[in-house]
Length: 267
Image (cartoon, rainbow, N blue to C red; front, side, top):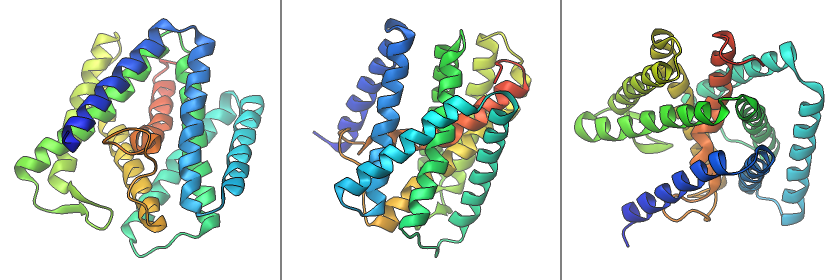
């Protein structure tokens, strides 16, 4: 079986699982499933630290404890501040990716994992807690998928200049632009289907998509720094859980902040 066939079959299974979880399971089970996904992503990130299993487990426990404390302490303005801080974080990451000669030690890698995963976890909980949470999450997934798919086909057709050759040789500037255009169309269409303001999301969709690309490149940077090809192995043709959710991890806080500012949801 070819690598492309494996990727397509795995993607189809993942879509089926996501839809089944969102629409067939009770809310508590959906939250537990989401916790499991993020814990697996956290475990895979701990592999970037190149530590023994017990130390990786301790890192995961610290992350889980911080997530619980955030649930207890953050709400309203403080939670909104967290998402603004996440935006600043991803801007810093963008600068770091441009300076490609940067190397990351264990401490930097550990902190980066928490800064990437924890705001995304809180954003996911807010989405799932909304009455239309399942559809909002699907909308976000579609925006990110459109950016990825649009970049792939545009890059194949017209790609010439590399976007980040040291991290992802296949990505091109032309593909990046095509992905942003596709994401804008999906964002606007989703807003129309959900009876929201299409114009706003048509303009804001590329921002969410652009941040999602930074998330993808960030995980690539830490994999490269750790000498790994994939973050894990559990998903045939894709690698690990983190290899699949890297774009969503970056995009989720920005998406929730956008929905909050447009009064679609209450943080």
